Image (tube, rainbow, N blue to C red):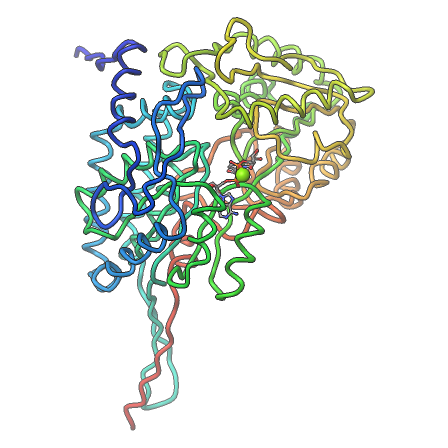
Length: 504
Ligand code: NAI
Ligand code: MG
């Protein structure tokens, strides 16, 4: 059997095509079933982080635009919520199939606006986003109620109903996956949605919304763009928005809860992390080295909430793991996100690049701390926000470098002697999103799983969230769970208890 290589345009041709697409989408939002300019007509620049050029102007929505989009979603709500769940599932499945047909241009547009490498991040992300939408499309039959034996002559039952218009706010680091993590469960359950993309990455989301629109009724899934204060806040505060689902920083997550408090609106928050990755001396070191690199999400420039950024290595394996990891990181190919050979792209923005640089410089100035590799802009790439994968040892646990989420390619290394000490340090954080342990000892593994204060725990691997696995944080890492059946039922429906007294 012969295999046919898929057609892959050169980086130059891929960029030209993605640029043309970006310009076609410029200034618009997807509201009420079509691409159009919002009433305010204002714009914000979208930058290509790999060369610092403006690729297009995106719509910069304000409170008036938000109200206009929310009203469209509200008009679409009665028909969508009353539609049989089976039909909603069928439409979402067809929408996911359409996305799959457009996967490659979506991945290219994403690489252009986010700086994420096409081969290592954008293509896999598009595939995961489609998988997630398919998953929710198939869950329609789980929107069922239950009956309960009550008094004689009564019939008591519980049904589930959607909430109404959902306001969704997402960040830039995985725009398409996070879009589907919000839209999938919300729409399957019968809600309508206004989704605000991140100001740094509005275009892929808008194109995906346009594709969904080929299948979905108008007003069901609306995508707008704009800044947090100007568009995100009025969306969260809008009285017709009856549920807010947010992914992003801890600081904004707390703000969202305040906005929601006044109207007593339920909120799902997927916030940051500073997750531990612990290596015992009995671990398979071959697996560990790649697990440390995968866990750090270095091929996404470390821009992941679940990244294993605090790496605890048993003293007996410390030197070996460090030297092998440094050697592997040296081989990572950093550069043009649209080049098939590139494994690590650019940081999203000047702001994030400066933030990463500031934390590394803080570490450099810390007595006892030592930068083992990286710690600088990538050589030969003077334009664009390219930063080298960075490992630092000796940073105190009280330093902001250790307590804050850096959200860049920067990991901290710690040496430990016994497991309890490592576990204690691992839990010494305000966050609690993910965590991993590498060991061959089953009892140690299960004791770690029991004692680690985190919502997404792994042993001998450090994979990312996938459709079907509940994902979410403990402590300051958030409220609620995503990617699973529970997230649709618990976060996007209300239950109604009904007792019918039919007389005996
Ligand atoms: P951010 O939390 O400010 O932005 C995320 C989303 O919230 C964007 O759509 C933004 O426009 C919106 N937003 C901002 N302020 C808002 C407000 N007052 N009301 C409503 N919406 C608002 O994150 P940013 O500024 O992009 O990144 C800063 C830091 O946040 C990163 O360095 C990282 O530590 C963390 N972060 C965590 C993410 C995660 O997945 N856990 C994703 C992105 C950022
Ligand atoms: Mg911000």
